[in-house]
Image (cartoon, rainbow, N blue to C red; front, side):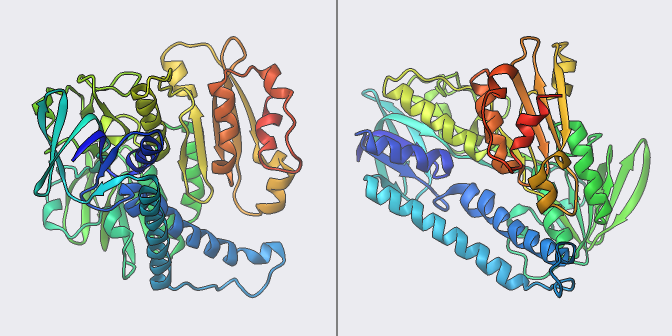
Length: 449
């Protein structure tokens, strides 16, 4: 029961670093109390994208006449088969993770892990009826849905993302509290399924800190599809069939058959035994340095549990940085090119600085913008919806931000990630040859304006 490294949490940060640690020669144990793969594989990234792809195919089928394909205008769907396929996809991927753990020699313990303290420079962990020790510990326990203190909410059979992913029957009307990434993705899915969707957001615009111009464009697209938006609006009370909301001091009532709460997530830091090692917290997560090291030199924390960037791909990179530091390699965490994607239809993808952030901090910048309609490939494949590519540079003409609305922005934003991380200038980026015709060309072409 003695290990070189113990990893608490089997999500993207946990299982990815477990495999790498074992393959690097470290005797590795991975603790996961719920389901291997974490929220991402079981309740987040993968299941939502699987369902959203079904919705996208349905949207495309209904619009096929615009492309000369007839007979699909009244395409219907089988909700049960959509959910079954989602579950099948999750099972396939989690089985793959289990196989990776086995093949790389990782010991997997499916019990809740609690840190008990330190003895003889070994960190003691209890799980189930057993006790384990490790030289290093990496905490990757993720996050859980934040439930706001709204009057009447505890008495209502509301949904979180977990329940929405296993829906057996569609409601006629759905009110989504929160217009962030998760809220908008579910708004997209249920809108495609024919549900009348209302999104209620406290901020002046949906999608929080993402580019405001593109967020407004996406909201406009969904308003055309029939989604109602209530911005600058606070939910003050709910019952089984309605929500009382307040805006500018005036209250009104929104009727809804079902409520979906999507108001963010909070780090899972409770019941871990952090106090036994005097591990310092910061705001709502575990405090870490640029090596993902906590206040204890042999304890690291990665992913949502740090309370900062709650993204699976960020968590995976953070765990690599932590492992590399343990192995004595020179590596530091950088968030300069940390992409964020909303898998609506159309998609919106962003990386780097926004105009709003730079303006607020009085940092000089220049914006290059080009509609996606300038891309021949985009026009050939997108009869419905519009799009925009926005590139932001600093006073040294280095690319520091990229924001794209349109399909398939999630597949081309990586180009901008590389440019930002490697401090590409306009001149350097313009020398790169892009294949034609591709939608990705829009990033290259935007910089010639």
